[in-house]
Image 1 (cartoon, helix red, strand yellow):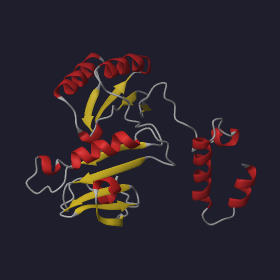
Image 2 (image 1 turned 90 degrees about the vertical axis):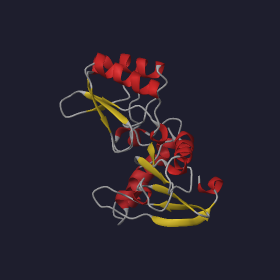
Image 3 (image 1 turned 30 degrees about the vertical axis):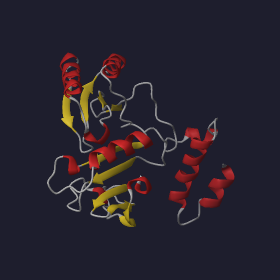
Length: 224
């Protein structure tokens, strides 16, 4: 590890090399190298609380809603839990329900009830896939030419929980009107009349970047 750091410290791309090396080691080695583990940038996030601390010292809890889907029963369960623990609820930019204001001591019971209701962690605290944002696609929209929700759910369930160098976001749009903003995601997929267009390296953060078209009009198997 010291040799890796020494060889990259003066390189122009050192700020990209170090996180990459640290992430690869953390992912591949059964026992994480002590130097990688000691650095907060590479540390595997805690899964004991499955929550993010907020500015006031309380925690946010975000269960997974693959593709933005949630059942009526799930909505009722979330509402009941929010009322019981006096939580603020909000639909996040990732099409998930965020529960805010949780006390640390309440987190185990909150998650017990969420899991009992069929939810799982949305990895909002992790360097992993956060979500696959979708529009309603051809199932409901008169303009849709592809099943964006079904594809988004499939992708999210396939890649959830896999460690990545940083948080990852997917987007799947059912037509070129692009309601899911797929071209602003790390991986974006857009339905066309002939198949799916696959985009990569988009970003909507502090330095927005339009994604690059990697492949055009490919079938669903190759797009995912």
